[in-house]
Length: 277
Image 1 (cartoon, rainbow, N blue to C red):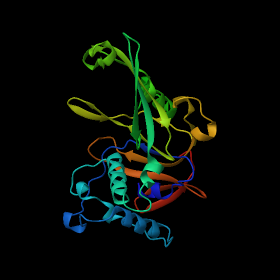
Image 2 (cartoon, one colour):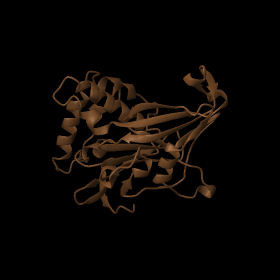
Image 3 (cartoon, helix red, strand yellow):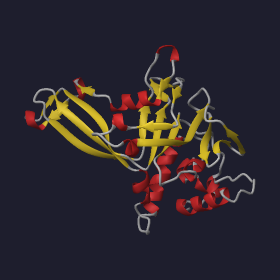
Image 4 (cartoon, rainbow, N blue to C red):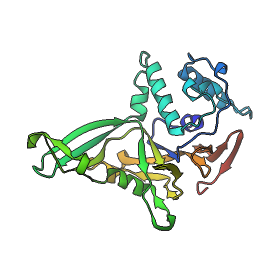
């Protein structure tokens, strides 16, 4: 995760893809190793400085592990990203770069709900730091595209039965309605989270469907209104993957793009690799 954010170019439109952000490997760090008052911003600065020193020594960012993540319970990479961005936003709120997280990671959704009785449409603007995408079901676990996941995200949904819409134009009665999302404002860095884990009582399982994703992603079909391609084109620069069959254990590795190509980061092992990997 740290390597993925460190390689980002905040002047371009980039994508971080969290593929199967589920349970992190068990942490054996003791609670007394890391003080609770650690500044995430300062520790990130130390980590970036160490990573760019190019001294060939592996760097372990223990001090970036927040107290909420101590112990031997399982954790989530998506949850860690959210926690770190929230901490950074709080710490930077009274500095000269107070809007950095907002300006870099935050986008905005347009939510539209149309009552099927009076056909009145209600619109709401929702900010986001990442998008959590459901992987569509396929026969025989055939591969799906990242675009198909996004299409599923913005697809119109019928609100009925217990989810009926309270329509103010229909005397606040509960009516059937159609709800849909579009991307109204795009962030500089777009974080996409693939929901690899699903809950089917009484068990959780991992979705093994392969998701194909391009090096260049055009979000125009999912945006509110027509936009120039330059404004809707994103370039993949990082992928964080969960390895393991189950939901209670596993291991994370990342692939990140640097000036001379793609690299695979697996704990202390770093290897250059082709994009096809």
